[in-house]
Amino acid sequence: MGAYEPTWESLERHRLPRWYDEAKLGIFVHWGAYSVPAWAPVNDAGDVSESGYAEWYPRGMYAGGSDVRERHREYYGSDFEYGRFLEYWRAEAWDPDRWAEFFADVGAGYVVTTAEHHDGIALWNSDVTDWTTVERGPRRDVIGELGRAVRDRGMKFAGSFHGLLNFYDPNNPGLFGHPGLDDEGHPGSEYVEFMNEKLRELIDVTRPDLLWLDGNWKASVEEYRTKETIAYYYEQASNEWGKEVVVNDRLGSGTELRRGDFYTPEYDTFDEISDHKWEAVRGLAGSFGYNRNEPDDHYLTVTELVRSFVDVVSKNGNLLINVGPRADGTIPRVQRIRLSGLGDWFVVNREAIVGSIPWVEATDRTADGTSVRYTWNDGSLYATTFGWPDESVTVETGETGPDAVELLTANGAIDVDWEDGRTVTVTTDARPPADHPGHAYVLRLRGVDHPDRGVQ
Image (tube, rainbow, N blue to C red; front, side, top):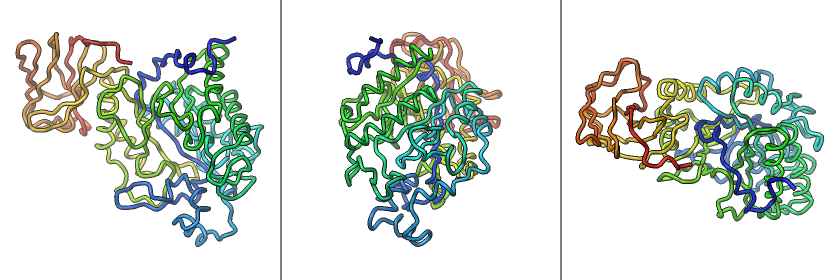
């Protein structure tokens, strides 16, 4: 018998790999047949409507009374089935190496792209189903090609599997058309067997660095047989592949028990430092898949993206930020601008993020009300201010005061005043340094001991 058995007692002995904890930034990619219609209604707040995200198109187009259904009939006709979009998805401009180079330039440590979303279409070379991007549409092994390009650049890679609930079965058109699903999407044994056959194949063929599952609304962990899958995955990774892997928490309904190596709040974060590793999952705008209906002002600004990233990391999280390419394989300009801006900031301030751990507290404010976030890395405490402080920043360093205080930029001039050896007041210039990308400013306080290095 292997080291892992399908019990919580056994599975929770698995340790979070260091590479995942240190990476801090991942890129999520939602790309599929839904990228052809690429449409969902939006509201002024940019929230998900009752019809759902753009990548939920197969749900909306079959749901009575939905905005997606009405638009689909207007543009494509009532007899146009969702599965036909696969044939119109040609990926004619897709270059996996160009994607991977861009993600590496942004500073990502890992990339997760949808291997199968809620539409039953596999983006790898599958022998379980012929509804694949290899047999139809792009005629490309999307997961295989992108995985090689990403790993060649030193990043980790996985294809996410959203089949714990599928809105659509290509062989049985209609909402929840698979014969193993009831009319609300609750899976029976036939569907679970078919789903697990595809999932095991994805694991065996692509050897993912993460098992990133989604669709946990309808059945329990026991019904989905998720524990068996995790045990198999851990065993393959340790005994066959010789790699350290990680599993998320979307394992079935009832997972308020908070299982998994890391938690995945969606469009949400934690208010305080979490002892358990977590990952903030969100799109740059309202949908994950490309939504041609989403205006540019619904997208996060670069400043919002940078500050969200720093906030997540300060509380023991990673950020998995999503891009939604067009059907042709190009990443929309508004998304590239936002991510490039994050990358520019990351180049200057990387040491405050990658490999860091939370400080004893995550958040603070300066005297003028500027928000501050703290991280610690290799003997230095980092104080990141969300804006340029008007006059000064005061930091409580604990038992040891710093040996030096610096701003992470080439030419930033600052004055430093120590008080009591434990309270450091940093007086800033009237204006921020011109050579800094802005958005958030990082002070490095060298020679500060962490009172508790046990946060994992």
